[in-house]
Amino acid sequence: MEKFKCVQCGHCCLDLSDAYQANVPDFDVIRWEYENRYDILEWVDSFAGLNDIWANPKTSEPVNRCLWLRKLPKKEKCICKINETKPKHCLNFPKSKRHALENGCKGFHTK
Image 1 (cartoon, rainbow, N blue to C red):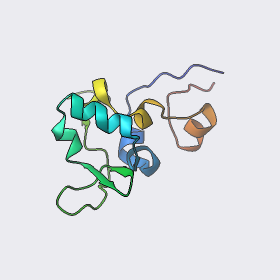
Image 2: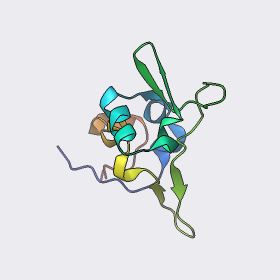
Image 3: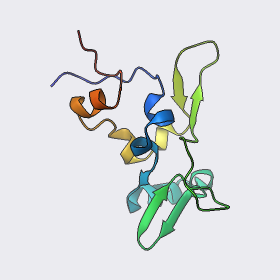
């Protein structure tokens, strides 16, 4: 399989709800607790064994984009503000080349 390389366009975090609206496993939540990342944990809505990300802490409603993505000044690239501890769901996105192509991900270069 062709190698995936993130081009930091931000498309997945800004536009694809299956990338930024999901459930995270308990080990992500436990890791954030261990790391004292309450800035992240306040946006996780844990209910009935599910950990929904990213939910507004005041309303529990899902947000309409990833909270942690920032555009680099004067560049066409974005960075993840929690890259060092981002959820496994984000680390594994996209799931395959086909998934990337279906969603407009530019990480697989097709010629």
